[in-house]
Length: 464
Image (cartoon, rainbow, N blue to C red; front, top):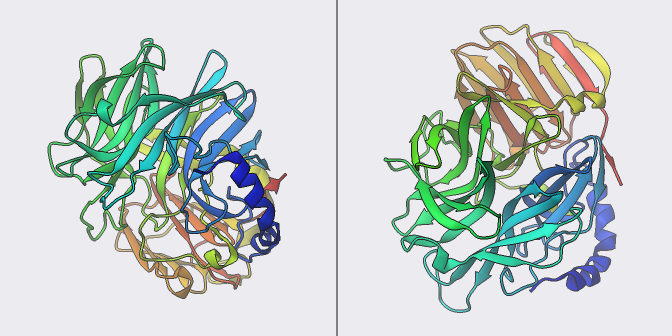
């Protein structure tokens, strides 16, 4: 078990490593990242009493991510951030092998958190079909910083008999006074699906239905999310086991969404065509929430589990980050992702880009509406973005550490917006209808473009 006392005693011994992390050339300037160690899925995203709370899967002591708890960061404006103490520790018999992913819902001026407690039995188990408890746990907080006790809501016996030991990542949706819990799952027949449970009080949940495809679509659906935009419903999932195609499903695992017509009460639904949220190398486990302004904000993990490529920062005691926060909207049943408005406050010098000139810049925002049928942009000397024959190619060479080529069919290019940080790029095409997010590790600063546009040098976010 991994409790608060263990964390505090051990963290004091890592102080010397914190300077190494801070001084790493590839340390990000305006992305959310951990102080040290490993980070993956964003968890429990919410806004409460004027503060945005960003929790995440976290291992402060191993950059490979072996002992998972919930890290915690707060911000009021997405410019000034505070590292808080870890929030959930793996310190009970319900979650002794990891406090896995989950979400938050606010009710009666309290934050209700739901997450998966991982327990592995000792022995020769595969931990897929046998040897694992996957507990759905609830905690309640008055302030987002502490809580009283952990309440077991669902255990192995509460899931359908044909489920494997992989049921996790609860997300809550409220409708007509009822609360529906969406859980990612893998059946014993290796079919990915979402289990839906129902409650009237956020404490007693009963099995309600499942959502899946009538065709083979992966063996596991992780990190479900369900919401509506302008009356249209969307189901986000991360399918594992999809066969790679030339222009689709190019990562080892995918992240995307189904438009869905559904009547939760009658348990009837119709899934639309699955669409990927991001075509880059590093995007997984996105989670959304609605803030007080009515915006639905998405934050994803800028990483990829079980990928063949690597990150050199692990040598300096840290690995991974989160994407920039994105506001999501919908158009013609397609989700659009746009960097949140607050990020404009990071802009400083504006450079009017001259075609084919080179610039020593690597931390910037580039915007162009002067798109041509063919163009070429260098984001580093060995990172190229090329558009021709209705195909957008992203080529990464040595600085990709195993990342190479990604491509997307885009028949008409209307606008382009690129965010480049010290070791990342996020490319938004056509108001965010297409997005490519990737980590890159090149020490030279270099930008060149065959199209005109505006380049804004960007300031760093502030950390307390």
